[in-house]
Amino acid sequence: MPASHLSFFCPLRFRVGISKVVMALQRTRSLLLLLLLTLLGLGLVQPSYGQDRMYQRFLRQHVDPEGTGGNDTYCNLMMQRRKMTTRQCKRFNTFVHEDIWNIRSICSTTNIQCKNGKMNCHEGVVKVTDCRETGSSRAPNCRYRASASTRHVVIACEGDPQLPVHFDR
Image (cartoon, rainbow, N blue to C red; front, side):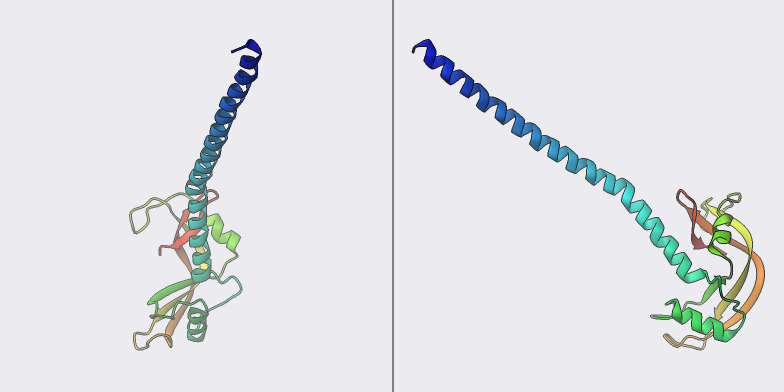
């Protein structure tokens, strides 16, 4: 075969080989990017989503900064409004009558042991209304006895920044 024919075929074969390599690298890069995004999603999104969900639940079940509480009608209404009487009557619940920033500041106090043994609880003094189910009602028409006071409470906090996620006692 003449030399002119070889120079014609070699560059083409070389170009075909390079394009296969480039395509393989692009495919690998795409797979690595997908893997990285998946790992980031598993490592970063879920905990913050879970923490936010628990924080939102804490707010729904325990925080009423505008309320003064103190009477049975308050407990009956709030327990229903906050969806704690839908399937069954929640036996006991505490509403905190403080600004959320005051409640969040409790998370910056010294860690103490929670009822479950974890060391992520914190103690503070706040205005509260304790609602205790009377024992003679059935969902969704639950009936409660109220008790208003200013007292020590213990809340569990998680995350960075620390957010209240559980009312311990």
